[in-house]
Every structure is written in C-alpha cells, then in structure tokens.
Picture 1 (spheres, rainbow, N blue to C red):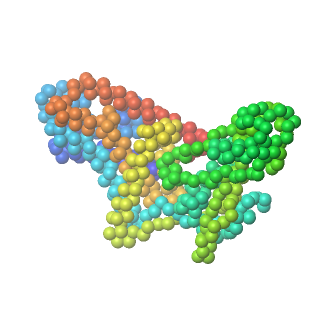
Picture 2 (cartoon, rainbow, N blue to C red; picture 1 turned 180 degrees about the vertical axis):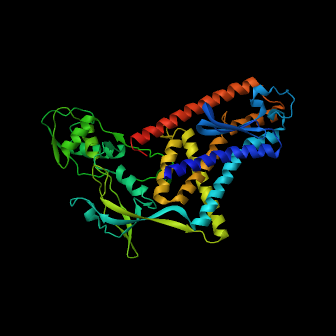
Picture 3 (cartoon, one colour; picture 1 turned 90 degrees about the vertical axis):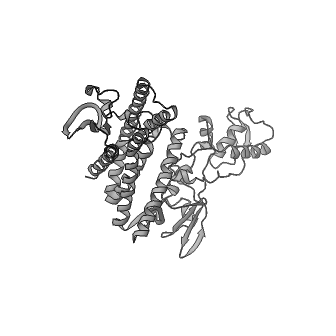
Length: 455
C-alpha cells in the first residue's frame, strides 16, 4: 500500500508540472492541442477530446507534456496564425515554459506547509543517539573504554553526532586490518625500522634468515568526516593507499611480534607498510548524568563493528501557530534546495559517479519504505523534495527540458529572431535521446540496487 501511495504522489507531481504549463497558456488565451500524461512512447492507453484539447494517457507514464498547434503538423496552420505558439510574444512563451517549474515549487511549499500545520512539528534532520546496550565480545576494547548503557553520544573523533551516519560510517572506515595505510604513518614507521636495522636501505631485499627488529606498534590516525559526507552529499575521499598481497601476508604474519626472520623476499619498505596497517582508534565523548566524559579509545573489529546497540530519538521542531508554520516551512525548503543544488553540482563535477544516480524506481521503493516506517507525513515531505528536484532539473539549460526551451527563447530575444526550426528540431532530438539514455541508465541502477539489496 505504501508503494502505491508513493506512485500516486509522484503522479500528482507530474500532473502539477504539466498543469502549470497548461494554465499559463490558458491565461494568455493560447490554443493547446494536447495534454499528455506520460511520454508518447509505445501505445496510448486512453484519449478523449475535452473542449478543444485532446487529453491522452500513454503507457510510458514517466513524464508528461503539453503540446501546442505548432507540434501537430496535421492541422496545417498558416505560418502567421495567432494559434501558433511561436507567434506569441517572447515574454508570454517564457512564462508558459517556466510555469511547470513554478508549479512544482509552489506544490513543494504547499506540501511542506500542510505537513507543518497538520503534523504539528517538522523534522530537524538531527537525532539524539544513546547507547541502548553493549553487545561486543568480552575481549573487545569497548569494555575498557568506560562506555556505559544509557550514555548519550555527543562526539566521535571530534565530530558532533546528530545522526546514526557518523558512528556507523566511522566504525566501518576504522576497521582492523583493512588493507590500506596512510603514507605518513608508513614513512614514520620506516624511519623507526631503519634506525633499528641500519644495514639495509629502503628497497633492498633482506637476505633470508636475517633477524629484523620491529618498532613498537603505533595505531593509525582517527578518521574524521566532513558534514557533506555525513549528509550523503559527498563521497568520502579516502587518502590511504592499498597494500600489496605480499604486504598483507606479511602483516598477518607479524601481528604482535617484536622481530621478524626474513624469508629473502621482503624489504624494509614492505615491513613498514605491513606494520602500518592495524586499526584506527575511535575517540568518543558522551553525556552521562549531566556530565561530559571523554572515553578511552575504542578499536573496531575486522568487520568495522564497535559492538554498540544504538537508541535513536528524533529531534523535532514544534510548529504551533501560523508564524512557526511559515518560518519552519521556509527554512526546511531552503535547506533542502541548497542540498539538492549541491548534489547536482557534485554530479556535474564527477564527484558523484553515474553508477550512483537513481530514478523513479528507487524513489518509489525508498518513498514506500519511508511511508511504511515513518508515516504519511514523512512521505509528503519526501514528495515535496522530489517536486523541488523536478523543478531544479527541469530548469537546467538542456534541450528537451524546460530550461532548454528558456535558453532558446533568450537566444531569440538577443538575436531578434528565432533559430531556424530545423536547427531547433535537431538539437531538441539530440537532447531527448540524451534524456532517454540517462533514464535507461538510472532505471538500470535502480533495478541493480534492488536486486543486490542496496535499497
């Protein structure tokens, strides 16, 4: 049922967008030939003439359109006909082309406003994280850290903990023997090794059966993450380098030893890499009985698990009264818009790879899960964010999108005449094919993510 609700909500957004174009056209008394729900790919499921507008529902439901007489070659309208969209003033066409985006922005505000008014509160995006239980093995370092059940986790490695992302992600990145090392620690360990074994140079093969003294163990540095990484807007840029297979075997062989007998195939550099791969400490700050406490370091196991069972309590913003409703709604929309724009920037700069792009299938699945777990109002907020995203993406200056049409109109205004129809058609077709290819890619990503249970 939750997935069906999400599909209906997404369908409403498409209708809202196309209704924006339609109503703006009617405001200027423009003739509209067709109002289509879905894209004209494959069979048409339903069509009916409503006044002077033909309404159609297509089998390919991922989209919609408003078509003007210019697009219907069967009408054979004279070139100077006032019913042609291209014969209307540029400012009118700009308003009509932009109206879909405007409608999605208004829809987003209405959905957020209604949620704030009817729900009585809004999510802040922040949570209080408590230790519900410690479930680590008895030999785990967490038992010596001083952590207790009921502690509120304030900071991890100096990072303010307001979501479950920080403890989970940092624990994963801090796991024991992950096969990666920081070059600074490698260089430091090499200097220690060389001072204890001055006979050999960095890359010199150490003869077989020679005893090599090992320096005292030094842990890797604590992992720190940016706010954008924790919000999922940016991928973690891992500065560490991978060990070779030989170095990994050597690491496992050394473990807690103070010396090593050479097998005749290793160098001091190999040993430096091997002893540098151990574990990143997790430094935690908690609140207990009104006091802030700094704990002893915790060292996750090979699976990147600390052994903490967390209790998450959402921090909400009360929305009692018109002023609080409007202020909270505006702040929420501003924050979400900023995040969407930053995410788009990350995609275009290649910081978010194409394999991580997802579309309507993933949105429906995730949205359905959110409605099922958190309720209908959470689904409304997600729908509002999607409406904003539709507005932003549609306004990009890409042919076949609203922003592409706006670009053509601005060029026409500057030139004093439009580009020739053949050029516009070729560019529009290329843009449309690009969008179809991108749609196929994101659907593939969605299905793959579902099959591999990544969603």
